[in-house]
Amino acid sequence: MKYCDDVIIKKIDEYISLNKNKIVDDLLELVRVPSVKGEAKPDAPFGEKCAEMLDKTALLFEYNGFKTDINHIDGYALSYYGEGDKSIGLFAHTDVVPVDDKWQVCKPFEPVVKEGYIFGRGCNDDKSGVIETLYAAKIIRDLGLDFNSKLVMFSGSNEESGMEDISAFAAKEQMPDVSLVPDAMYPCICGERSMIKFDIVSKNKTTTIKKFHGGEAFNIVLGELNAELVYSDELWMQISNVCGNNENFVISKDADTIYITSKGVAKHVMDAETAVNAAMVMADMLAKCPAIGDNDAKLLNDISSYLKDCYGTGFGIAHNDDIFGKLVCANGIVRLTENGNIKLTFDCRIGLSYDLEDVKRQIHISCGDAWTVENADGSIGYNMDDDAPAKRVLEDVYASISGIDGVQGYRIAAGTYARKLKNAYPIGTVAYYKAEPYPMPEGHGGIHQPDEMMSIDAFLEAIKILVCLLLELDKLIN
Ligand SMILES: [Zn+2]
Image (cartoon, rainbow, N blue to C red; front, top):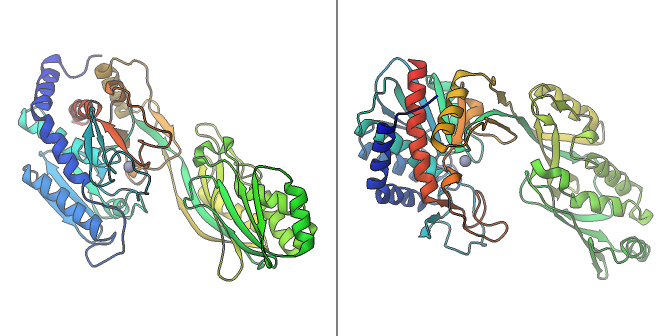
């Protein structure tokens, strides 16, 4: 089936090419605001920069003629276009993840355009989604395209760190009949796993271990652990023997401390099968050294059993979901608390056939009397029917515009706003088939990475796709 006739497509292409500089400038302007989560202030629940970002976004929609309401308390803005009994929601976020000092092409919040690409934190994730939304609405209005629904455009400021903005929206506002979340990929996402993040803390304090420290991100398998132990000749000898010339360990000592660094392989939680957890490497090694003492040896054995695979076997929660596949449970952060207890942070991604409360209960049970579970924070995923009419429209429109046939919606382990909405599908903001390759060093250029970048042509194509998706969804629901 052919979607969006050629005359309309040609008009959209002309509009975008006429307005290209304006579109890019508007995006660059948003990237200049360092909207990383900060300390809560009155009317700025996620920090002053996120609030400033929201005001700026609202002003941009207002300036372009779209009535906008800002909810300062919950940190979101709603802009509107059109009338109609039926509504279509568009949900994008203006907040970004923190930056590090590894940026090479530009400073994170001083974006540049180079060889057809924009560089800067948030240029892709997800300020592109905000601008894509704005221009899709403008195109429908300015070209006078037939559209009979009410368009509800949500700009959030807490997607990356808690999703309190969208939770408040879901609690307070009317749910659109169908929604798109331009923050993902094409043709669409049609399911997300449930997730739980939790800590386990040892009830016993360590006796020989003085430091046990590694990791900054809960969703990256721990790649390096630093430990310090109370020095004794016997322990030093045993550790030296066990480590030998093993390149996974670096050991040294002074009069009262043994220093050990263990190395694993850091990977994202969803690639945990090929990762190696550095805390497990450390625990397995130290457990072979009797001089560590019975108390600490017991703690290390427990750690080893919790980390022995990435499927949650150590917690008794291993599970295979027909649709989403194997449960994944991985550890990213390890600390010794001020009181001398060991604390491990886990990220667990679960298919929908395993009830979240049952998972939590089982984790509690497996921790028994030796460990406590803390900060368990869960979020339930969703799954759309393969034949859902809106999903079919998204797949068919994408195939029609891209010329790429047969691509179906994906089910993912990550979370987007869609999990808090009803009848919502994440879609792309970058049509990669339009992107010229741009070589970057490993670990650079992607979302959440230093030198985050986005092809301008691929982004402009995404605006066109969104217009066509909205026109077809409008026909579907009216
Ligand atoms: Zn995002």
